[in-house]
Image (cartoon, rainbow, N blue to C red; front, side, top):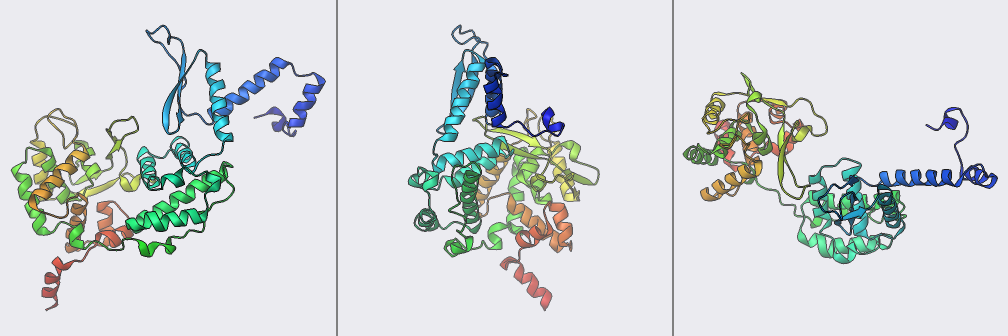
Length: 413
């Protein structure tokens, strides 16, 4: 902290600096050094890429300083003879970028950089936001941010976006992103108002695809589970088949299955506290484990515990018999964990072969929840085992479809 501020004096003002210059108390070298340090601070606040010195067998590059900038959505290499020259370039680059008028798309790109570099948002979140923004017309993307009007946005919604019949959640997300871009623009003084502010979800929701999936389209029936079990047993040496059986008995998510380790298998419970996620930020697919489940990303609380049953113990025996050895329960012969994408592709192909409309692992979670209902477990108990809020269980997992009506009729006789 500045000593003058600590001692109760007022902070240095521009007029104070001008007075020092006029009186000759500041040497030119001192002023130059102060300006250089201020420029470096300006750059460091905006530049997240590493600045490194090259050690290359190429004599033309050896000893040069290198970094990268994002220009027009593309990563560009910057080479300079000295580190100081790199900072001079970066200062001019970011100052010009800040001073220039920006398009709607460039403002969005800057917001994404802030989300990733300063707010720590995951790469998958950035990709998801970018996917929604890609729906905007080229004309609207290329319009200067200050020139975009509420009328422009509403016309695009009516003529281009709503005819695609988006789901309600997609419409909410789209409006959220539009408003975020302008809020960011205002904070950075790129624009003065938010033309999306008064565009409300209720204005357009009637144009959404409001059709809800029937329960039988979201949940594997008892007959379908039995068919999938028989098919898995025919290929029980394939770890993906064992994962399928495990999902039936536990309701685990695909990423949780892939990350499950033998140390998580306790005497009476299976401890579910990690998941496998996919990262594409390096330009290629990379799977790795994180120490939290989907519902714990913001508030980790040690995972959840799924009780072991006789049927689950049978599945664990199949897992122990898989070829190779690994700390992972489901692994290939080399001991590497089965990726969640590989498992889901195997499940989808099995469902297609059997002629099922439902083809995803989530259908096992809903079916497992139905089994817990039949066993008399409360919504709080079911939510505890499945790893989500009670309200989520009631709204999205507790289904009552035509397949269960006959059983209900018999009970009502």
